[in-house]
Image (cartoon, rainbow, N blue to C red; front, side, top):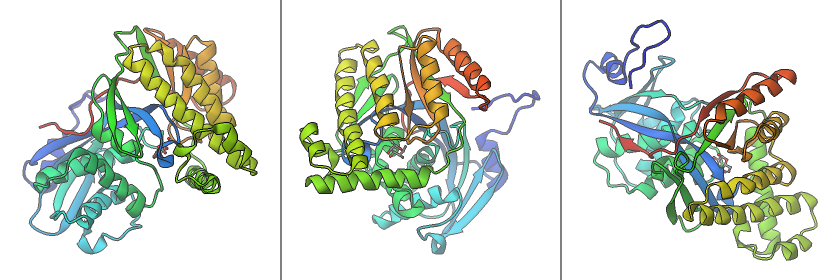
Length: 387
Ligand code: GLA
């Protein structure tokens, strides 16, 4: 993709940037998207259900093989070049290149032989906004390396290995949702994904045909505490499952009975969120299969209230954005992603997204918050080779 920047000059394309680094053309160009989660938050690591869709915003990568065991990774934006060798492939590596190195490591760990490569990366996925820019980087790296080194890795395994890079190499204890979304999603569909069986279904999400728009609004709230709070949520869900004698909260079938057996109020609230959120994903999948897109609006609202009051992962900017979206005419709205900032989504009648975003901008200005950013979410394809 070549865009004309505000000065009117043509910025270098990925191919040009690759040529600058290596003196030759890349063997190919690949892309993997960021995602928003329509519904099903913090259910993935509880073996539950999620329903993300891939965004049009993506990480692109131009790549080529090298004749040694060195990887050179360059970003177009910051023009940073990071180099690592096989000896550096040690879990816990610092810096953004760990997402790339982690994928090499995860492939090698499962017996896939990956040689050195030059990789040039560009991205228009907002970073730190809860839109899975890191999963997109992992998934595009995997797609490129698989092609460059003729590796036979089917899509679900790609998603699993990309997550392994994030969990075991980078060290973030996330679930399977983001890499599954970035790898498996399809244009015009949401991905209904069972995080236990890894079965999935592409359910129709044709917003335009339904006269709807999906506003994605980044509150631009710094993600304070996100890592420690995420890990704490995960631990309390696991502790609750253990106390209930089930392998994961997914297995709770009678919520009231389960709540009566948990004496810790925090564990009760966490359990209540996960169990009801799983039910909301199932209900949303039924509605989308039936083509009733508007029908999911109340589920989005319930999901938000549950994240706010039971799972306690929202922050004042996010709550204000959701409340304002609703008073400005959205049909339904919720925070999306891991929480403690990041983005909200709002289902809006076609043509209304910008007005809703403007109202949120005004509400933020009156509260002294930083101006939010927004775009319209368009369900797009997962990781693929572009050329
Ligand atoms: C982050 C994690 C996902 C998931 C969500 C919450 O995005 O990476 O695995 O747990 O938070 O739904």
